[in-house]
Length: 99
Image (cartoon, rainbow, N blue to C red):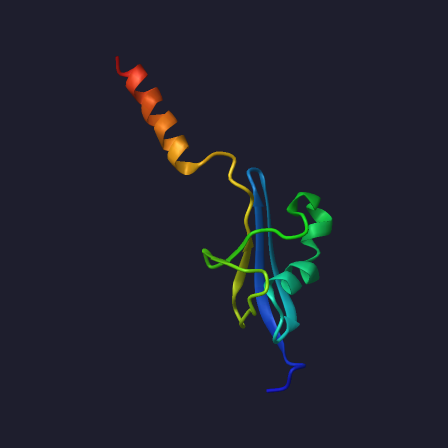
């Protein structure tokens, strides 16, 4: 296999009311950051920033991770609230409604 071989990668970025799901072709040996750059999503969604958190099939990975044929790169948005705190607030809200 030559370094010039191309592989197909999926890339996903989701907002509450809009999603971008792309399938792109990149050279074998490309990193997650390379895939993001090749996708053009940073231009369409500037809030992604320069070093977004990413995952491949739900597993958080570094931007330097080399992708494989068929991987799905997921660009993660920052959490607005700590999940534990969200559960506490939801539980507290339920308790006050049940009184």
